[in-house]
Image (tube, rainbow, N blue to C red; front, side, top):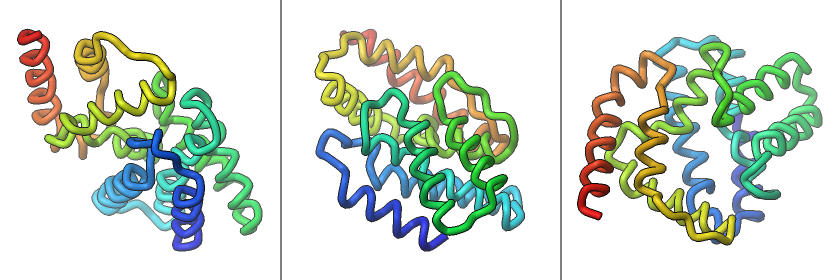
Length: 192
């Protein structure tokens, strides 16, 4: 795993722009940390742990090489090229690919590894960090799209209301925090 971490850290350090104020190395490391906690909690075996953490490291690398749209496919391609060069089994690469693709907004995860990665990616929705991170996400979205986005608070509220955590780990630990963030957004909208 250390070669993967070194490679992804190098990619972010050499390719990241100031536009990527959210989808950056800090976010990737947070996703890896969250995924590691859940891997421990669920007692994942070595192979499953490798698939999960490799996917966590690579899941947003596609953000470095193009628009937000399609970044999952680009990240999966970057992962595949790297792991093929290190002679990783094709079936494992496919599992990592599936986990990365499960982070797409409208995609439902198909197994525990995908559930964990999906929840790790949006862990902040159930924490106090949401309030600061939500602003950063919108700032990045506006910078990258070149457009001012209206009704950001309402869009964030709609997103939180539609969102669901997939793992019992996150449901048990983060649902009350997510509800608090929903109430926080409702309060801000009322004051507008």
